[in-house]
Amino acid sequence: MKRILLALITVLFLGNIAEAAKYKIDHLEPAFWWAGMKNPKLQLLVHGENIADLKPELNYEGVSIAKVSFVENPNYLFVDLNLSEEVKAGSFDILFKKGKKTVLKYNYQLLQRQEGSAERASFTPADVMYLITPDRFANGNPDNDNVKGLSEQAHRSNSNGRHGGDIQGMIDHLDYISDMGFTAIWINPLLENNQPEYSYHGYSTTDYYKIDGRYGTNEEYRKLSQMGKEKGVGIIMDVILNHCGSEHWWMKDVPSKDWINNGGEFTSCSHKRTTVQDRYASKEDLKQFADGWFVQSMPDLNQRNEFMANYLIQNSIWWVEYAELYGIRVDTYPYSDAAFLSEWTERLLEEYPNLNIVGEEWSTNPAIVSYWQKGKVNHDGYVSNLPSLMDFPLQNALKEGLVQEDTWGTGLIKLYEMLSNDFLYADPGNLVIFPDNHDMARIFDQLDRDYDLYKMAMVYTLTMRGIPQIYYGTEILAKSDAGGDHGKLRTDFPGGWKGDKVNAFTGEGLSAKEKDAQDFMKKLMNWRKNNEIIHKGKLMHFAPENGVYTYFRYSDEGKVMVILNKGKEKAHLFTGRFHEMISKESKAKDIFTGKSFELKDGIDLPARSVMVLEIN
Image 1 (cartoon, helix red, strand yellow):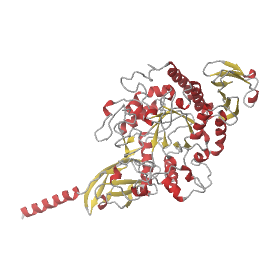
Image 2 (tube, helix red, strand yellow):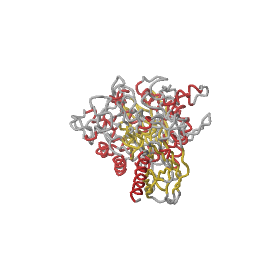
Image 3 (spheres, helix red, strand yellow):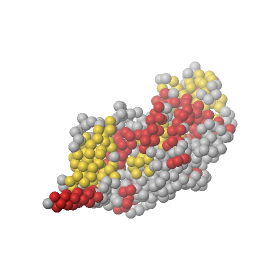
Image 4 (cartoon, one colour):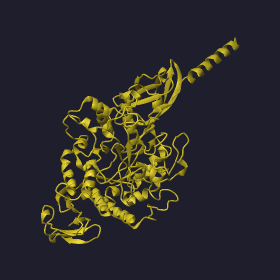
């Protein structure tokens, strides 16, 4: 009898093992969360073989399961949790049961938020962003150039390959970034891009909760943020809501047919962004834009799927909290579903009321760009919650204004007239302005490598309304490939790799002009860093005359006068025209030369020059 009973127990035991072996959890995201968030709801995505057969249960004070949702694919469960206001940080087991038997167990953690997390500061016009393509900035840890399990290997001689730059490289050079006068770093995406090729740019995410191993680890990213904060440099995360990478883990086992637009089949995006605002656009044209894939390797995410929308929202909140972010930049902003974008920004700002978020709407038409800014009253009733946009219209006008010959309709008048369109924006002072970025030719090339024009562009960007962004290497006259090779315009920063003959971090090997540009930028940005007139002051500009454009930043604290002279001959600027800003008693000092001026006598302008004058 004992033998029979023992055999029966053995059979039952082995049966339980066999039952458990049929199930496993491959992904549970987010893997942990925080107590004390504003929104009490948390949705867990659970993925594993036949996981829908199991029923989740938990027992932890302040946490309850509100709902369990099933989708077409039995390998997914979506578990909605309610977290009470009083819930304490701690860990608890989520049990996955088949009948009364516990088949799987997952230990879930609720962490304690840092004090003041919800009220965190974010980027403002007091900041200057340094835009870095991490693969091309500095290789601080050569040991992670190639990582087991990640397809593409390092190949520095290939302009479109991986070169080895990483998070440690940025940590190593935080002093350089801070000393130059930058107060924030916008980093091109660092999340895993396990694509077979062309993965260095980072815009084909294959894991939304994991830093790419070739850049480092989640912990190193957090360390970068913490160390940057100590040096007065905040981290801005580049977020992609519109698409993922074709090698993302869920592409091999999608939750439902509508997880990816167009049923998961590649359908090219029309890229006609104006269909969103166009009163006369057909629904078909709008669908081709909004639902089409950016490229074949970037499947288009369907944010009309409630689980997808919630996943993306929670992921962004998770990174802000985990990495102690200073702000967010959103890639290809208008390509996502418009209603989702309003919800996404609303939910983030609910948790972080001071968080600044800048979206990319690559249009040179300010009427199109302004549509997306928070506070804009739109013709179609669309309500956006996005605080900031990249000011592509002003960037284009800057290039044209400096390169074109000055006539009644070309040259600097383009810059003046573009700025006069600011009435279209709800908050033009919160736009991000820039001379170039990672998707266009370097500004030095755009200006035909004219150093005088380069200086004008830098001064304009760093004294104009808005939040300046400078692309890494622009401070040393970085050049780009005239043929449009993006890999070559995202060139390696000299000195970022062991054995580099030129080191821009120390100045060793830079040409006289490159070093002069670097010193010019350092002086200008550090002057700006402590100048509240530039951060908060009003703006008045005067129509260009004879190739000279003058504008003022002013407040109760004082005035700053900026003069751009494109003329090939020296000129005398009569100051009577500026009586609204200066009087006969006004005196000024050039921030670069230290030279003082009696403004009542006018100002002698050197040929092809830019002046920044502090007015007493």
